[in-house]
Length: 297
Ligand code: NAD
Image (cartoon, rainbow, N blue to C red; front, top):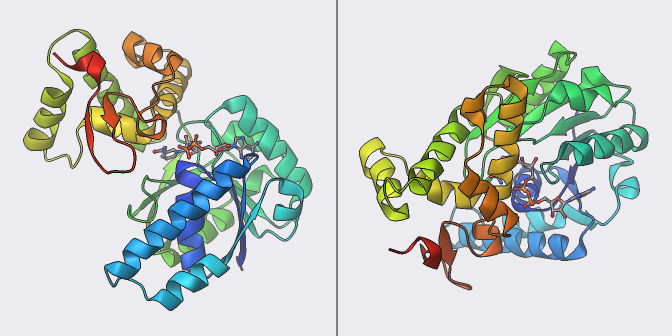
């Protein structure tokens, strides 16, 4: 029975995952090495809960109970000692994830299930650094977590049926729709999404059309709620690049090679919405954005 959940990483995804578990009555320990990231996460969760109260989707008591279910930590040792489940949502970097999972395996109770929210890194690889590969699984939430229904559940090579079923049921308890997939590069969601985003960046790079034109074609022509360049900014350009690198290396197929423009933007620190600029520039303190100066005609 899962009651205590530790979320490792309090960035874009970690705060949403913590929000959803806490709102559904789980005790959540949220860990990040950065205190400012934890402060920002609690601020974001509070703001999102306030919006839900305003829209009458939850009551003020539910908001207060959700916040009361959350505790923050800057180190894992204390945060995982009573965990039934750990959901890791730290930066998308394989060496970092392997280090985190080795440590989580040492620090967590033997019964605990260790899940990763990785967008693309092999669950089998992550499981291989633990003494409990049968209890390691992918729990890939979508951004923004409180809004998006899907959770892609990734079975590693050794993940048992029992653990998979527990996590599928748990996702339903969170009022999400779980879909079970196998552990191959990019799983399903990003194997299909990232080549599309990369192609949109290539179209911009080659001067086929501008930022707004590309996004408008996909929004109005394909009924996508967001164009691919705006979506890339929303996901984080560093995250997009990391996923494309995994697809490229994992399949050895040049069709997944990241567009040089994406590589340049990440190198220049233009990471999309979270850094204030990517294909669009985000106006601080508002929900407004406009095409970045570099891409204006
Ligand atoms: P992010 O950069 O917003 O946040 C990552 C957080 O991890 C940072 O706050 C950082 O301080 C923290 N961190 C780094 N090392 C840590 C450690 N050792 N212990 C604890 N915390 C640590 O990244 P994100 O976009 O939230 O992505 C997190 C994970 O979720 C990645 O694996 C990513 O692939 C995946 N994911 C991202 C999206 C998306 O749209 N951004 C969607 C689905 C899945």
